[in-house]
Length: 429
Image (cartoon, rainbow, N blue to C red; front, top):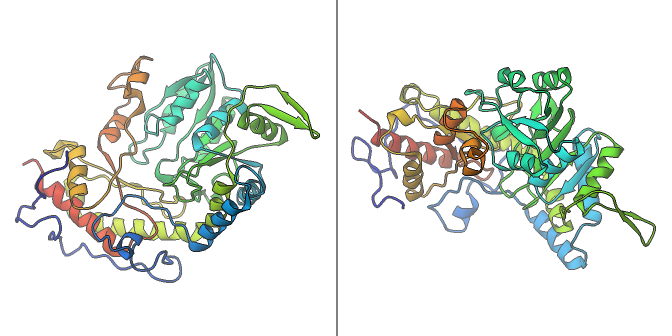
């Protein structure tokens, strides 16, 4: 339950109007250049007269896109059709001409990526325990066994220094996860995969718009899975896509997408593999088509807001408190999320209580993610507390702060003011 009173600082000031060190200054994002405004100087909630609650995520959808979706709804053809094909073509252009197929989620794209890669019973797939549970669930879905490797505590991604020790004769693939949009080192990753003849199915769900050394994620590598869920930088409300390598893989992915069906002529139909019902609709595709032209602007805006967070949080007072900040990468990361890790050993309250205090102050936060291997399902496979200490610490203490294009500098100030006041008020002596 949320707290009944607002937290107070040591000086008695409520979280609404905390006192901050003089070094906590936030310049407003520039209206031009690399930090273009989206949604004006006021957020959509503020424009609607709702001043108090700041969610941790909100999509940017312009009026032209809304009108375009309405046109699709009026057209009489709302399932997979011309807009899906157009969306796939635009995605292929973004991914350097590689074949791309759209689906109705970023979960099924991972599963189909594994199936296309030939992963099945008796195989092992290496991945991270700090991820949305879909990453490992799809491994189980295809009959294989997930093998977890601890995270790098700095990047919070799969620790590539530990991967080779986890490879066995049964290892078939690796699923790296670009947590919060920060890419795993693609050079090292693919060198390891090539050395051991492994397939790579990239869980780039959060990394659309990210890059590696100037090359967009998805434009190179092996199989790449993106998500277009509602909270992603580019959204189709629900959806995803899979980047493939050649025509054979593409046709196989199409079969898995729709019940394994292969059509010929007007009435020819055959089924050679067990597929599912994973097709994207034209309604969703039209939403994605409207989002794509804004991708660079969205990414630039998110990076600008992330910089403001760093300016506010990267101070002697915060560093002394032990709050862990993400890697300050403004060239490769798309800043899908801004996440801090709370210093549990210095607090008298839990993360859940911190989130409740934030919510009471009108600020939404999130948890991305608990350590997967500690879920009941995965404990049945033998994993236990202590197996992956870095992922477990992060899983207990990671906190996602609000970050979306319509936020203002004042919103960032408010988030940091409130969080720091709550933490100071509940610091262990």
